[in-house]
Length: 310
Image (tube, rainbow, N blue to C red; front, side):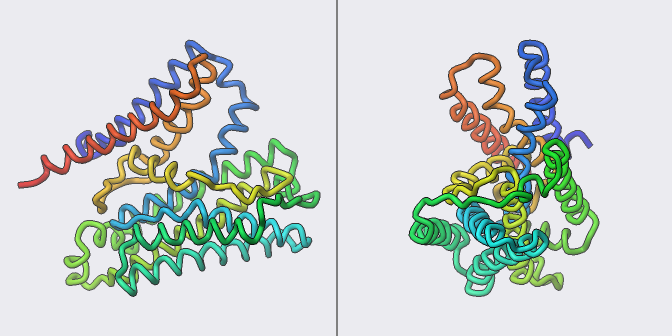
C-alpha cells in the first residue's frame, strides 16, 4: 500500500512540513481571511490542473489552456457586460471552452497530429487573436457579477467549494467509472486498449473536450473575483497546471496518477510564494524553488519507471 501511494504520500508529507514550518515561524500566514483569499484566487487554477492531469494520464499534453482561459474569460466578460443572465453566461462559457477542447481533440485524435504541436499552435493563435481583437482593453463588469451576487466571504467559500467538488467528482469518476479506467488504459498502452475493445481516439477526444470545459468553468470562477476582466489573464497557467500534475504524482509517460496527489502538489506549489513572503525570503527564489521541486518530481518518476522495467 505504501509503495503504491508513495509519490502522493511524499508530496503530502512535504506539504505538511511546509505548513508546520509556517505555523512555527510565520503564524500570521494562517489568518482566516487572507488564507481564504489566497485559496479562492488559486481555486480556478486547481480546476484547470485537474483537466491537465487527466490529459497527461491519457498520455497527451495540452499547453493551450492558458490562452483558452483568457478567451473564455473575455467571452464571459462580454456577455456579462451585456447583462446576459448569469446561468446563460456560465453555459456559453462552458460551451466555448468545450469547443476549444474539441478543436484540439479533433486535430490530435482524429488527424493523429502530435498534441504538443497542436496545442502550441492553438496557444499562440488564441493569444494573438485575443490581443488583436481586445487590444489590451479591460472589460468592466456590472454590479452583481462579483461573487455571484453573494457577500464576499460566502462567494469565496462558493468558489473554493466548486473547485473541491470538481476534484472529488473527477477523482471518483477516474477510479470508479468505466470511462475513467478507459483513460488509464489508453495512457498505459493505446494499442492494447484498442485490442480490449476500447476506442482510444474517442477517449483522447473526450479528455481534451473535458479539459476545455473545465477551463471554461475556471474562467467563470476567476471572473467573479474581480470587477474587471484582464484580457492578458491566464499567462503561464498551463505551466502551473502541468507542474501541479507532475509534482502530484501523475506520470509524464501516462497511465498513472491520482487527483488527490494533484491537490497535494498544487497546494505545495501554491504555498511557496506566500510562504517566502511571510518568511522574509527574497521573492526571486520562488521560481527557483518551484523549478527544483518539479525537477525532483520528474527525476523520481524516471527512476521509478526504470525500476519497473524488466
